[in-house]
Every structure is written in C-alpha cells, then in structure tokens.
Length: 203
Image 1 (cartoon, helix red, strand yellow):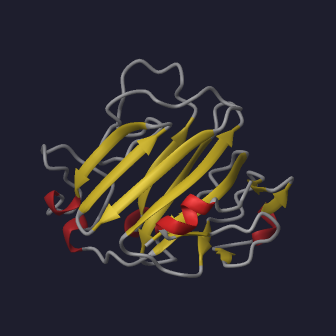
Image 2 (tube, rainbow, N blue to C red):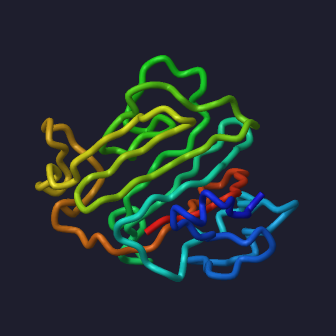
C-alpha cells in the first residue's frame, strides 16, 4: 500500500500520502479528526474540517482508493481555490453509500456533485474498497469509479451561476467556466467514518 509501482514511476505518478503521516496536508479546522491507522488515511467523522493538500494542482490524474462505513457521506474536492469556501470554489466527486440506489442522480456515488449524475452505479457496498480516478485536462473532467467511466464533463458549459447547461439549478454561486482551475485537492469530513489509501497524482 501507498507505494508506487515501477509502472507508476515511469508514467510520472507521485504519492500524495506516504502511509505514515499527514505531511503535505492540512485541515480547515482541526487535524485531530484525521489520523493515520494501519497505513490508511482516516477521517474519524468528528466534523474536524476538510483535509487538503498544501500544494495546488490544475491539470492532473488523481488516483486513490476509499471505503466508508454504512450510510456515510463524504467527497473528494479538487481545483478548490478558496480554503474558506470549499462548497462554492471546489469541484467535488461524491462519496456516498448508494450501492442499492437504482436511479443515478447528481449526489449519487461518483457524481460530479450537483453538476453531473454518474452514468451508472459503479460503487461497491459499504466497507469495501473503491478505486476513484479523476482526470482534469483544462475544461475536460473525467471520473472513473471502479474501472467504470461514470462522468465526462466540459466545465466550460457551466457559464451561468447556479445553473446547469440543461437549465436545472445547482448550488454554486459562481459559474464554473470562470472559476480558477488551479486549486487544492481536499477530502471532506461530513461527519462519517472514511478511509483513504494509495493517493497518487500525475501531472
């Protein structure tokens, strides 16, 4: 765990989590709610704030694994530009226990939260590890969950604050077309227990 393969190294990946410490990370509130246990980066679910990378990223491939307790809500944020306002200045891939959900919506597991519903239900049951890959290339965003492509979005299509391209409402008070593309990667503490491992990034 938390080690690069020779293929990873050749491809240009580097680790974001060393499996032993929170080096390179900080919390918006209290890092005590985030611990390293058995090589996993653990959110204890104490609403201790989001954990975020000190470094900022723009175009990248982020590859990680996560698992949750039953009924837990969390998320992976990226291109998060204002640390005081993750909700409006960070794109989020939804982490949620929606294994038994039939109809995919914009807050199902794997969704680009409140913007694009996943094309299929690819999440595994609570307690099992999921692999999440986020690809950002300028305006193009792709999300793959457990080897299934579930989202492809052109963020330039979100040109009106609070509106999706199809005219439906979203939560954002800014138009994503105009938002900064350089930002932090963040892990959400939404009051539930989540574990992460094998976080790596390729620029």
